[in-house]
Image 1 (cartoon, rainbow, N blue to C red):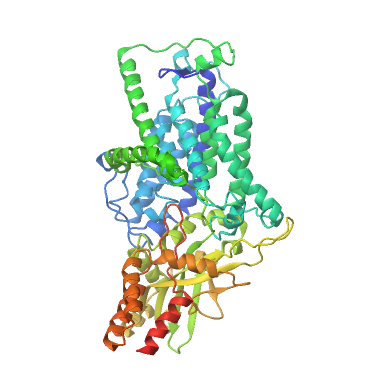
Image 2: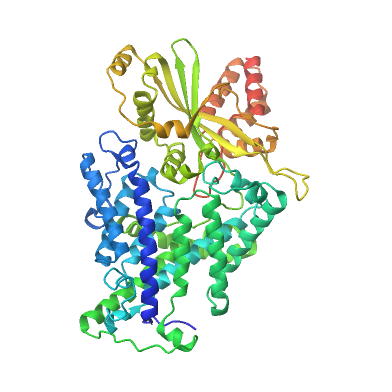
Length: 630
């Protein structure tokens, strides 16, 4: 049954949305309270870890109200208004006004600095903005403090018990496209198809660490493969079965179990909670559907047919069409489908993806800068995801020549109750080590903060302090295991990547440190960093457990030099063919090789491709050979 554009829900649908409003507002409050624990540390205009972005977003800058913050008072006022909006939305006091205000407030905090967001175009933050925006168009006036949270049925007039369905359809399709993107992305690679993906996901040392990760489920071959294939089957089937009445409720129950399991076993903030509520909108039907399909007796709605209301409904229908087109253009996984399609089918998909790209060029600036509703394809934990995480390390050289090192801790070592509490730090450290964005300003501020507030007063004994990036990843999937064998046992490879910042202390700086008082709270640093008592990161890599990463190193090398590959191969081929004995030519080749090595860096895009800029043993031997000949 194809719904009509002017389809409406009745009292039953309005009441269901009232209950969903309460749950969404409760999630808003949780998110806001979690941010409040560290909002001054991260976003203080005077000494916060993150510089505030001054770019204007939204109409008249309403989506970037924090861009002009000059002191902590304004920051906390903005924060308090958002928290108050969420509380009043939960109670149903002026719900639409508070929904609009909360949308502007949420966008303002997200636009203050991208590093505090879990994902820029995919993840919980864009999902929050999309939910907050569409919520403005829903019937929010039911199940409130005024009608005793739904117990007073006589409170609402007949005309208040009917509402248009198109905002519900937008949230339904949003949920389906998230699942479609995840499904198609998992087909782009072998890990989900061969049953090894859950091993890599559960080995991820930040987002893969939840509060419930028993070995009997995640560390046994048979259960790990079962979870992998079950998740893939759910993502393949549910975007289609949810549309049929007979399979809708079982589909929603399966999805509830999947997202609840993800929330317990992973650390993705409130991403799973918003998805559960997004799928809950499939429980809302139009009046026409309830009469024709469910055979319910539905009282005819008393619709206000005045000209202003008709004009308002017409504007709403037009916006629904615009928003739906943008949703398909942004979130439907065209690129992922193109990647997994056989060559004959790609010929037909290519014109579609080209048209989609041209359309995005036209509409993306409006949806990104004016509405903050731009999103990407939701190819989460795709088929080539291998559990790698990029982190940071600090290395201090003391005046006596000794070296002290700290690195971000494995999240398995953090108490379970603190993993949600430190979720914003997870995002911060994930982004600050992301060299593809080159966040030099944020890294400099962090290094300065650590020097003056955390390592003080030992800072007066430091000769230099540097910030490095390193990568943690699990060993390749073990082979020749029985169904009931264990998968992993302390199996992380830790590889040093590149020095990002270096700071050398002077006598003047030491005098300045001596005059400071330690005032900031540093509990989070000692929770999230561990001091490396033995060894350094000087080796190209080291592993706890058997080193079985030769194949991975070859893959990493091939990806590492993606940018400089053509230039370096040209030089190497020319050198091999000519086999020149001219010392000057050898010197030039060596210098060009070194230049290429210095320019490599780590890239981590939305598809979470694992790219590591480490020098392989083979490259090192080649360089040493050239140096010896010279």
